[in-house]
Image 1 (cartoon, rainbow, N blue to C red):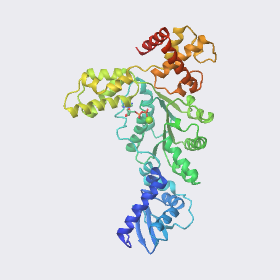
Image 2: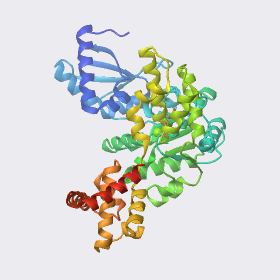
Image 3: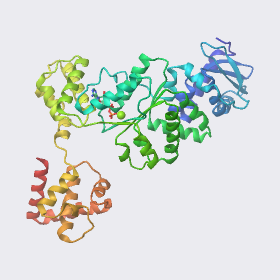
Image 4: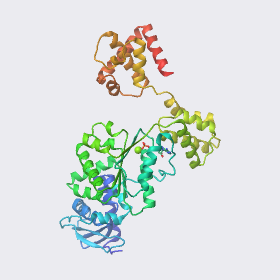
Length: 462
Ligand code: ADP
Ligand code: MG
């Protein structure tokens, strides 16, 4: 450990300064760039800070050293310079002057490689230890996606590029991607795997633009064997990020590196994405995760109950698998809740306690009417064409039923006014609001109309 002028005060100053950096540059930047810094010495007006890699040294020098010096000078006017140097466990320290020009980082890739798993920590996002292949329950709806993910994890040759996984919320996309990363990490510790969300990718890229350092950004991705980007639907519409994503993607594919992508829709259905990117994403293998079946849900419940080591009667499992159908995360949440409740009150899990503990969740899952169903029902009821729900026709004979359908959509679904408007031929939300008010007025003044609408509502709810 290097010597210090006044040990305690410089440590306190350093702690304060880190707090300021965190507030100024944000949590993510703090984690990536400032947390790995270590204060080594304060001597004769000079602060010495070590970083673990050259890449980080160059980056911190070119982006933050001036700021660190200014802030430190404000805290302690005797400080006039800041030195940042590399100190890794295997390599001797290499000092570099903060004042000097930022050297290009030709060896950044090698440094990143030397850092091994660290690379994931800096560029990527942390992996959930529960999201492994062993913990993934396979059934008809997800067997193809599972097999494709396993193939990517097990083979060192690139067979299809990219692997594009898509499916609705909570069906296991993130789980499979983490499982790929865990598997490779265990079997081939030398291969470099990066998993990150599209949002994080965007965030890093936008920062790089702001600091005019897209070179370093690209550098980070150059030495990767497998790149996984989750939820790319969040990239769509942000042109510059889309462009950069496209280039990063192409560069990796050209070098025969594996890319894995997930989204909530198939490549061709991704809206707002440039056509060439959309079609490029579909070139490899596209595997979708279908909505779960009753059997799969039951299997997942059994597996989770075993992991939690709780005794759940088959009747309760069947009940849950029947009732909670939309997404696996919710199903898991339900199981966790009844397990927690049973330990807390010290009673066995039964059908009655399950219904009691989960009554809010069960009600929400009870019946989800869609706007499409409402439109169909209402059209049949008033004997108009379904197309008139979307059409611009304003004749009373179609306009009134359309208003009824909008009113019921507002009452029976969680959709917002603009969302409802969109489903009715792209109408404005004020039109929907007007329809809801109009129907309420009519119902208040006309009992037979009111009965009509109530009848429709009951049919839809049942
Ligand atoms: P997505 O990314 O598709 O929204 P996740 O991968 O986050 O969904 O899955 C949501 C939750 O459901 C996670 O806790 C995950 O472990 C669990 N899950 C989803 N599918 C399965 C499965 N087939 N077997 C076990 N757990 C699953
Ligand atoms: Mg996900």
